[in-house]
Length: 339
Ligand code: DAH
Image (cartoon, rainbow, N blue to C red):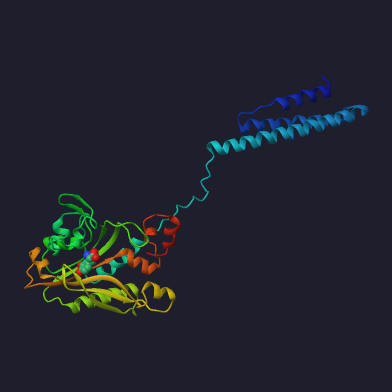
């Protein structure tokens, strides 16, 4: 067999070569291109080739060299990528970090308020969202004809079942089940039959507070609420108590905080007064104590109630109530820093 035939044989071998594993490619490379391989041996034959045939021999050898090299490169790169997709696991690669969520602004405000009252001795109490007439209305001194009992304001779901319209119902449940002294703070969802708009929703959140002991006065209430306002809005906050009416308190008041009148927005939010109402409060009506078997001759107390959305709107300056309910991540992600 002439040398040229030998090269032709190797060329067709290169052309047809297939490998199942990377090791086969490597041993093929050593056999053809290695330092003791076929190519090396053929180059060694150069001196024996007659000078007129050397050109053709040299060209054939070069062809064999490049084709063998190309084939090996091709087989290597395809086995590399196949290996990676099938069973290549890079254990040193940093993992993808899990995206951290953020608390909902309503939870943020709720937790801040609960925390302030917890620190001055109030414990948390919760009650059912589905209530009966007694706990939502009658025990709280609502008369039979009180407009809040109207279908237009309350979602009735059975002969004596309704969705609570305020967390004041929890007051009653606590008074029925605990002996004074009582100091509780009651967060929860409440429901009213209202059309949804930027300023009203049929579901919202309230926090109710209740304090009953011997000799509790209006001054005690004011001091507790002033402390609360300072903790939430800052040391310099001013409060005022305006006379008001609720069936379950006597006397009743509404508490305003001084918001200021520096910008046009302040004028708009406070309707030009500088003051903003943030909660209702009052001394618990003796009838309400009696309804829950607490002797009004021995005990007195105060109660207060506030809307969490309203306070969140003030703290975060977000005026459209609907944003609090839509779970739009573009809105919620803005509260990452608020804990
Ligand atoms: N329940 C009242 C409401 O939903 C808020 C309220 C006012 C609660 C005065 C109280 C209170 O405990 O004393 O509007």
